[in-house]
Amino acid sequence: MSLLQDFAAPAGSTSVALGFFDGFHRGHQAILAATCQKLRPLTFTFRNHPACVISSERTPGLLTTSAERQTLLVGAGSEVVWCDFDRPFSQLSPEEFFQNILLDKLGAGRLVSGSNYRFGHRASGDVALLRSLAQPLGIEVVTVPGVEEGGQWISSTRIRQCIGQGDLEQANRMLGRNFALSARVVRGDQRGRQLGFPTANLQLPVGKVVPAFGVYACWVERAGQRHAAVANLGVRPTVISNGEAVLEVHLLDFDGDLYGEHLYVELTHFLRPEQRFADLDELKAQIERDRDRARERLLRPA
Image (cartoon, rainbow, N blue to C red; front, side, top):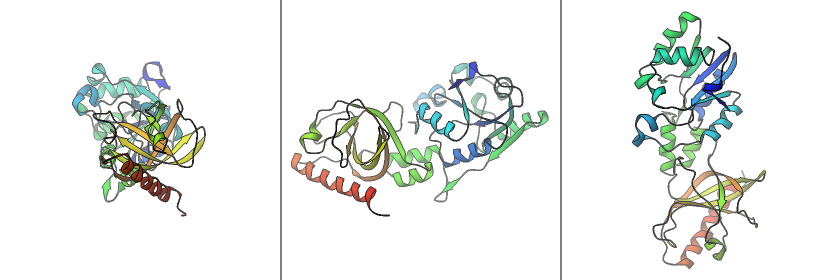
């Protein structure tokens, strides 16, 4: 991982992708594909969402942590240079950002962004201004058109909305992969084991978007293996009052202790909303049905 303050590149040596790239969805992937065509591919992005400084009440839950974005961007063939978006940075004019960051630090010889890219104080710079600053210096500016899904442009905002509504199928189509949560297994109350369905309890990652509460079919990666699973995300109203949200994952056809392990959970299908049951017997019967539906969704022959 490279930080802006520690990074320097020769003038004109890099092809720089510009954007926040939350989720690294199919539109972002198109930008990276264009970035990697010439020169030394580089992505310049922020570790924190700019909204947390500009308007903290509007800061969205993120589709990807910075560590997840690092993995995805590097996997697409790009180096990544990270910057903390703070008050001094937010005050840079578009011209100062272009000169001080893109030229002096990143050595840009080529700039690649989406058509709606904004930069500089109060987002006053746009692609047209970027091109007017770059062209006299012989710096190529590439604007990558958006990618559509279902007749609408793919965006991180739209994907967050789908995830919040439980529309995993559409969200995953826009992402180009399954939406995932990654966390370490913590000690639970063993209630799932008492019901005959032992679960791994994972606390939701801080700052990530919270999917709709309910039951999901999912895939779990652990120790290099991939397991079909069913998960409940929510506050468990049948057994707990005023509980905090937790993700409980039951791996199908698995028997073992997962405490302390790090699990990567890919949500694939929203099976039903979370609900309160009259008693534990009714809850157990529903869990059995949920398990069978997850098995059918994940393991049925193609």
